Length: 427
Image (cartoon, rainbow, N blue to C red):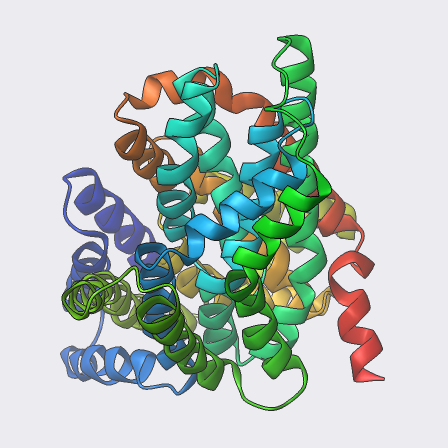
């Protein structure tokens, strides 16, 4: 009864537009008040503090900051220009450019919404000028933004790693191929749609122009190499890599490209603080929520329930994916991960599923939730950038959604895609 009251209270508070962090904290507090010993209230403060008092969690604000500075400092724009020179000539070339650019920028920022905001602000006006419907341009930017949180470095991977005590480095490695597959899936969907609607490329560039664009974007293209190369080579940890990313962004934006002033840098830091404040606050209450569920033995009860329904691994994975897709429509990916990962992971392990593999397809699930109403944050960001209603985006969203779901199915049922490189490096 207490668990039923907990979830009903949380969803009622969210439906009343109470901020998600306050809704989670309020639901736990009320449930403890009515159903538990009042002495347990102390765990709210203890677990809230423990949830954010983690060295890997420090990477989140630094990766956010790196993305904000690179967006304001000309690095992202040069990256997009270089990609457009290479793939822009093909049918639907600007749409393909969005997918490729999101792969590269995702390898810098680690955030889906930051990727949508940055790439969308550059590409949506350009695509509209070249004859694309503005709703279509916003739809492909919103969909491609999901790559930013799967291809490493990934903020959701950091959170999942902290919550489940899974290696963040292994998660980063496991996210490489799935992130690339997501980009390829969106590019294929874009090509088919543009071919059907006779949308050509923007003109083939000469080798000289391509080489010039790549040379001008060399510092932008080098950023993922510096960040990820240092992690995989063992030179620094993911948290240390996030700090290196900020330092790299500041030096290139301020002293090389000279497209950001000290005042602009100050504004970027303030913007980072605002975004991180929202993210960090969510982690505290969500950690309390997960701890309370564990205390009430919800994971073991869930495992018993699923075992009563099926003992087939294929069916079990299908049920979990449907559950995650549904919850991703109404919950932000951060609290959803913190709440659900500890509940589902023991059952996953009992079915022989590696925690790293689970982290990858769980993250893809929750990222798809960012482009599905009613909560889809990527849709809100894209609509704000394009200055259109979300309804206009939804008209063009379905093909890209199907592409992402197809990648999710493949990654879920073919673990070698995410785990192959991890197994290779584990020896």
